[in-house]
Image (cartoon, rainbow, N blue to C red; front, side, top):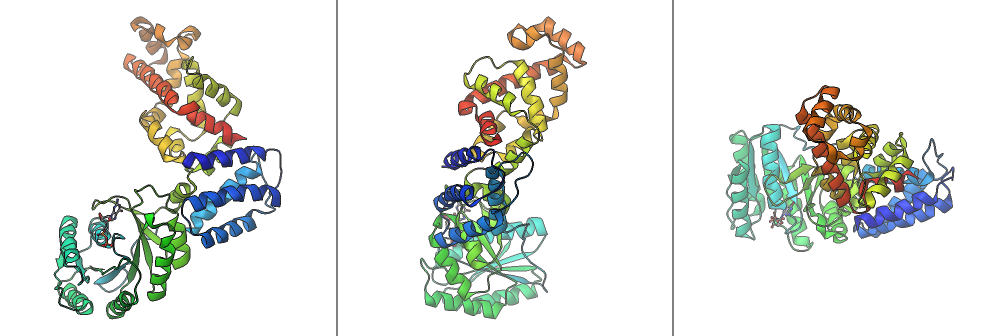
Length: 445
Ligand code: GDP
């Protein structure tokens, strides 16, 4: 799925070479692809429409500067707008209130409320050094109360018992009183969810909200819900003044388009992302990174810009062809590649910009380390004869000693370089069709 969109966009980007301006015509084709990508990522149709219109407005008539072409500029605008729509900057939990700060958790059953309550407790204890109490107002499912007790213990927080025969409002107020008297900083209130929106449920949570006056009312929503997230979000937004969203199960297959819909519909910032069932599987939501996921193409925008900065596309292309044929990748090519990588802001910087699948593969080759040593590595290769660079197999002990002396390094470093060279050769073979280089070539115009 991911490669499909970047392939399609890349083709379009290429076809726009030589055009100096973004026009109705060239924006049209591009937006068709972006629209498809967003729908595939399960963004709700009205949200997609809005988004496309906004991008068009921003893009039309925009001057295309430097060596970029209109397609590349458009990709940049799409990505930026996507990140902006999902929220910029980091929105942590607001605790600026006379303690205890009350946080009300809202959402459908199965959305991940109870799990998230415990994850948040852990986050507040560890990152914000707070004393945290949890309570369940879900009197309909005794198992839910027990579940909260278990995960609260795992989080290292305190748990306030609730009896199924009591009213949710009374339980919550008793917990608040307890929190006050025992000097808790935060009270997390888990609530009952139903499988679908129903009026009684909404009335109950409204009543809880009125009684507790929480500083945060967090809407917990399952990212896998896709299109349905829209209706749920609407119902909760109408019932409650939401202050934030937690998007759970982002570790699943979904492209996370729900983020866009939910953000647009609730107007509330997405504060956290749930990324595993485990208690530490909570991350502060990163809109920029998520934009890449929704588009299914990593941070290609940044990559495009880096590539434009001065990498020799033609050399990259030649290298890519060589690697693709699977043969003849030698130390000269390795050297050329090192210097190109350097121009692109370093290996690890580049990895960040690749779609995660590709980056994971590349990561196996320990590229962070390679970056640090790049200059020394160049020194070592420069100490080799042309023949040795073409035929690294010739490098036995005596030649290695000579090269090490020439470059002013230990023999181990020469060995390490040869290892890294081999790793890279393997990695490039593994990346189908030349991977990285192919991508640079395509995006480079
Ligand atoms: P609640 O009914 O809203 O309280 O939902 P629960 O907290 O009981 O979660 C429902 C299911 O989703 C449980 O099996 C959780 O382990 C699982 N879950 C919750 N958050 C995440 C998440 O971020 N990732 C994954 N993979 N599973 C999650």
